[in-house]
Structures are given as structure tokens and as C-alpha cells.
Length: 172
Image (cartoon, rainbow, N blue to C red; front, side, top):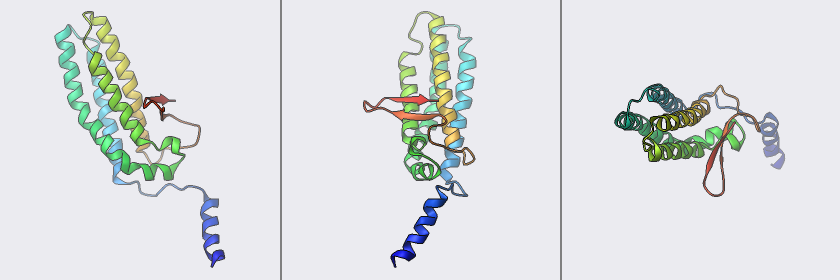
């Protein structure tokens, strides 16, 4: 009986990991939510460069936050269910959707804590631009993780790295 079980097992190992033909519905949702964040961040970045005063800065920040938070909550709720599919597609370094969700939530928390707090508009604009660049990278990563055609190989491509202190970092 061992030989009978060993042959299929060896065949599976020899073939390596294979990507499921049909991605789970969560992958489609992840891509859609990632695109929602991308669009909102692009609009925020464009509009923040012409903020006239502190009040317009706060209004723009609040509007953006109200658009993005539900998408980030959706990504966070999908993350645990995406793990098995992502692990089946490639190395574990690319499979941490929970790291991705946590990093995106931490980024918006950081931004909303300091955005529009300076009396100088140039400082507020610079923070908005910094945030938009960072969040855009994370959102692009969410879109890529939900795309079944994107190849995930060890040591290549962007990923979310978690450190022992809980910090997360985007690694290109």
C-alpha cells in the first residue's frame, strides 16, 4: 500500500505548485478593493497639491478616509481566506495578505494622525504626497496579489515583510 500512496505523492512533488485554474471569489474582491484604493489615492494626490488652507486640507483628508476605510476593512476581512490560495501559488513570502492589510491600515492611521496638522500648507502637501506614494504601492500590491496571472516566485517581486516588533515594510 505504501507504493500506491508514494507514487501519487512523488508526482505531486515533481510537478511543483500549481495555480488553481479558477481563483477564489476573494481574489476577485481583493483586486476590486485594491483598485478602489488606487483610484481614491490618485484623486487625493491630485487634489491635495492644490489645497488652499487647513480647512480644505482636513475636508479632503476626511473625504479620502471615508472612501478608503471601507475598502481597507474589506481587504482585512478577506486576508485570512486568501492565505491558502496565495500559498498554493508561490512562496510564503508572497502569501501574507494579512500583512498587506495591516500595513495599509497602519499607513492610513499614520497619515490621518499627522495630515493637516502643520500651519504650513507646503508641509501638509508634502505629507499627502508621501502618503499617496506609499499607499499607492500597497494598493498595487493588493491588486497584484488578487491577479491569478501574476507569477509569484521566491526572492522576486514586491511583498509585505513583517518584523518581530509588529512593524511592516514594503519590500520591492
